[in-house]
Image (cartoon, rainbow, N blue to C red; front, side, top):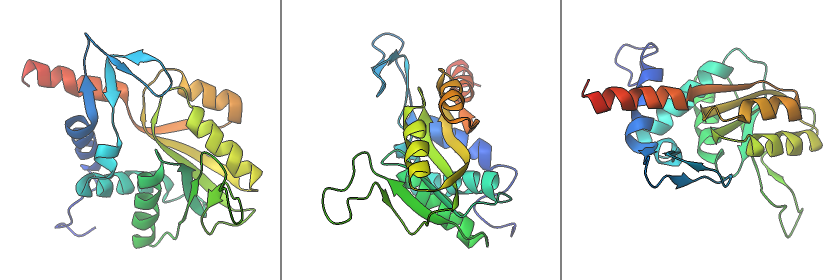
Length: 201
């Protein structure tokens, strides 16, 4: 890497944590938040506000590229729309770093006209793929993405989340798919930043 590049190898994960905390982390111990799973929590992580931010997208793509750069995968994909920004950022960053990765998106419902496909993208049967997601709570989106990918004839090699809320999703993914969920960051990482910020460190 050139020394004047925006992202420096040694700082990217801390920078990503900082931007997720600044743009995506909400904490309300009194009212709380209702998650997509229906569960209540005092923490809400709106990862799209990071992933769709110009700097956040660069950091996200670089972080996922670091996980996949030595992996024998042909493509990266996930369930719309939580995975969309991560998929594009990862595929682009990887290709810019001489690792050619195609992208694919998995619909929540099949296309209602034309080919009626579940999956959009140039990935062919037999491809080795990585499945990504922004925030994992129960693991339901990752599990559905793996199932649809396997139905399409893809071989799923890795499953990776931007943030694992550490609320049972990783265990559920392993049980239902046989795959280990990896995460770039965790809710505990964000809570630690919040504690330091609250103390004025």
